[in-house]
Image (tube, rainbow, N blue to C red; front, top):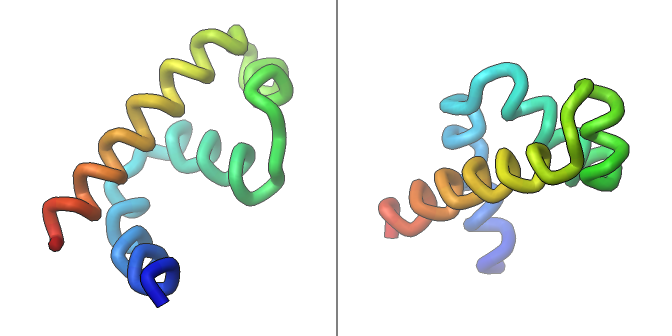
Length: 68
């Protein structure tokens, strides 16, 4: 049940992401691409994708926690 609540809370937060950030999240979790594959697709290094994902996920996590 908590997973459903978290997904429900996450939906509006994804609206705060810019196009590149949303694409990265979709590729990583929707298409299950690796960071290296995402980097290749976007012309970025795997390390840069890792940093971007970390920042994106931190923002989303903080947004969910702020709602509690």
